[in-house]
Every structure is written in C-alpha cells, then in structure tokens.
Image (tube, rainbow over all chains, first blue to last red; front, top):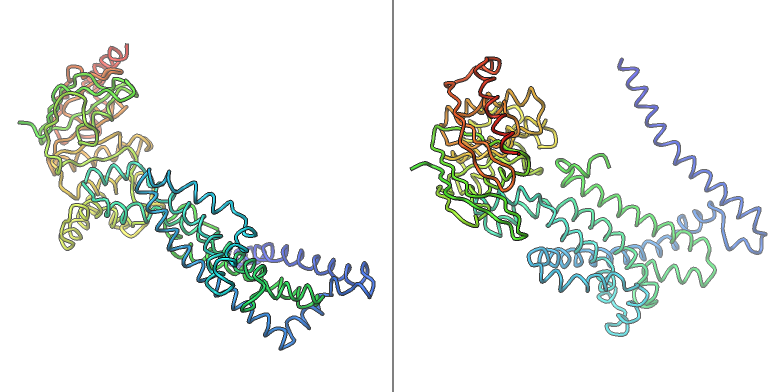
Length: 271
Length: 243
C-alpha cells in the first residue's frame, strides 16, 4: 500500500517535472541549431550559442558584476515604486469604496493613468523631474498603481450583503465594519492585484531606465548598451536576468498571498 | 405586552411593489411560531421589518432591538475566522467583555456540538455545521426574540430533522420568542406552537393554526394522524392563500 502510494507520488512528480524540462531541452536545441546551422560565422553574433552566453555573460566576473549591479538598481526602483503604489492604491481604493461620489469622480482618472503608455510618460517625467531615482520610482508608481486601486475597491465591495446586514443589525460603526468585514474580505483581491502590480513595477523600472538612458545604470540601460555594442552574450544574459526577476516576483507574491489568505480563502486554493 | 409586536405593517417598495399588506403578529417568550407561505410572498421581508433592517411604510414594530437574534438563510460566516471566532463576532460587536465572551462561546459551541470544530475555518465545515455555527453566533447575545429565515432550507432531509430537534431543545432551554420562516409544512408544524400562513403578494397573515402538541416533542409525532391532520389544515390554508 505504502509502496504503491510512494510510487504514484514519484510518477506524479515525474509527470510534473519532465514535460517542462523536455520543452527547455527542445528550446536549447533549437537555439544551437540557429546559432550554428542557420547563421554563418560572421553573423553568429546575432545569436550566440547558450554556452557562450553562460561563459561570457555569467561566468565572466566583470560582466556578471555589471549585470548584477544593474539588476540591483532596477530592483530598488521597482520595490520602492511598488511600496508607494501599494500605499497610495490602498488609500485611493478605500476612499472610493466609502463614497460612491468619490468613486465616480476618481475612477475615470485611474483608467486614464492605466491607459497611458509607459512610452508616453517616460520622456515627460524626465523632462519635469530629471533622470534620478525619484523619477524612475515615479514611473513605476504610475505603471503599477491601477491594479491595486481596482482590486482594493472591488475587494472591499465584495463582502456578502448578508454579512453587511449582520453588522447593521448589531449597530457596528463604519470603522468596525471596515476593519472586521470589508478589509479582510478584500484581502484575496488585494493580493491578486499586488501580484500584477509587482510585475508591472519591474517592467516600469526597466523601461524607465531604458528610455532615460542616463544616471545610475539599471538593467534597461545595460540592454541598450549591449545591443548597440553588438555584445550578444551580455545582451542575452541581461534578458535572462530580467525575465528571471519577473518570474521571481510572480512566485514571491503568489507565495505571500497563500501565506496570508490561503488558509481560509476558497479562491487561492490549490494555486 | 408581547416581546415582539407588529401592528398593521404594510410595506411598499420604492418601485411600487406591494410586499406586505396590513400584517399583525404578536410573539412572546416561550412561543415558537412559524410563517409559511408561497415563495415571494414577503415572509423574509416581514422578518427584516421585525428586526429593524427595513422600515415599514405603515404600521408599528415594538421590540427591544438590542435583544433580537437573526439567523439568516445562509450561514453568513466570516470565511477568515475560525468557528470559535465567528461565534464570538456579535459579542465583539456588542462589546461583551473578552473573558465572558470566551467562556460563553465555549459553552455554546458545546451546545451545538461544534467543540471539536472550534478551530476550523468555515470552508472545511459541512452545510449543517455551518448552520450550527450561525445558530451559535446568534445565541451568544442571549436574545429574547429569535428570527429564523429558512435556516435549514439548503440542508438535506436528515440534517434538517436533526437540527429541528436540536433547535427546539435550545428553544426550551432558553425560552426566547421564536419566529421561524419556512417552506416546509412538516417542519413548521413539528417545531411551532402556532403556524401563520401568509398569502401571496401582497402578503397578509391568515388566522393562525394552533399546534396542540406539548413540548418536548418526540420526532415520532410526525407519523401520528393528529400531526397529519394539522399539516392538512395548513396545506388547505396555503392553497387558499395562493389562489
């Protein structure tokens, strides 16, 4: 019985782990194929083979140091931007949930901010505030705030009407209702929004850096530099590092959501 | 003076729908009455008026609002609180001292048989257990008037009959004034000392039908001819009410 169960657990593990690894192998194979078969040697700089990327991009001390410094800079910007976006977003979402008038007044502008392409904001922000840390953070806040506002608002309004009746019946004050009913009810939605915003904030940090093109070098500036100098290995390494950052953010916030609401929330089950 | 007294209640919704027309109802401690009627006749609305959640268009409600317990159709538990903390909720809202609150919750959890599940979250409870938790939460404030809005409607027949019996035991122990809305004639007759039939919209209350069986009632009375005869009277009244 135990043997059977452990075997089935093993085979389940295999069925979970093997398919993505197989696809990864296929991708690397295709990569080699293009690098060595499709491209002739004087055009090979367009797509360096995987081991070259690892050797020059990751194993070379100096190159790796540069990329990690860029990563650290972009991370700081994204994190500070996310924290500010979260605080402002929670405050705005809460205000909007408390008053229909405020919701009607503010919501269109939240949509405008969301609809504005990063491309359009970045030059304007640079024009106004220069290219320093705070401008970069400002870009991240603009890009990341919308999902938090919307998810906070809808989360707060999602509390069951029967529960509201119960609170009304027992003469709960507005503050009590907010604290004991609406905030906890909003948590799953808020964390879902936070996860989206964290990803957006990373993108905002990289894109802002890319377009500013000056000041402390983040991943964005490195991407630009490597591309213009035809440093294919480093360019690939930087691309891999920035997508790894995106994946890490997604995983961390998924874990955070499960840690906070996973025990009781029906939605966050099994994800 | 009864503990709950509704006089000449009429209610018309803003869209012009006449929900209740001239309803009178008196319930005192120690009485358990049922409201039965076709769906949409305004039974639940009448409970909302009695609890103060809705203001009637006409008529008067006399009840001590702070001692009304209301058990909703759904268990309406807070999903982020364990059973115990859910049971304590209303006592928290009414600022009952923590020590008393905890001690009382412990006792009531035992009464409804949920001690073992005190630290479970609602999503891991069965429908019947959720309803017991909801019932326990209401009992925490020791209400003198208890309103039940079809609380067992979503349960299977067996859980429902068990809960019927348990609720009556609690009623006998606590001696509140009970008003129980239901669709089931059998449930109404088994539980109550009086059955009020409500007509279809606008809801009016017909002459109540008395149920003479003494409490505590054995589940077996459901199979006696007297029980069947009373159910028959209620059914006839209902047919009259719908036509």
